[in-house]
Image (cartoon, rainbow, N blue to C red; front, top):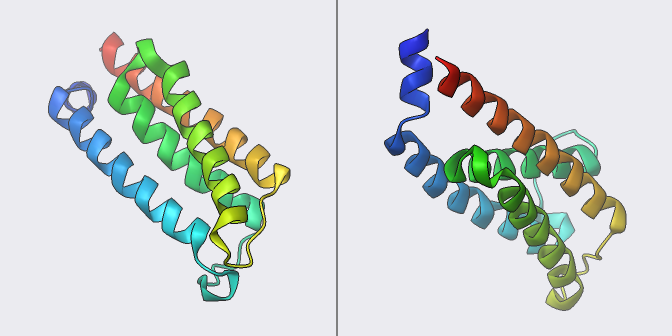
Length: 126
């Protein structure tokens, strides 16, 4: 188990987390800016979808950046969500920005950052 945790904290895995975070960010942008009727139905509430998406994004960003930059990683993920909420108003796709969506983004980002911090702390302790 300790070997697995050490591997997870290795530079290569952290770089993969960085690359994956970019791919997740692109997927979130696409899903945020397409017309609502073109979205897949995943049988979750809109707020749960936001929270999960930003939990994954922030978790990956924070894991990539490391424990020392958890707050920066969280701010990047939340800021990205705010930018996309504004972009929805400008895109002309019939989607509207929402403070509740931004709140769900914030909640998910904080959970993802906490999970990344915990994983990195456990890996470092081993």
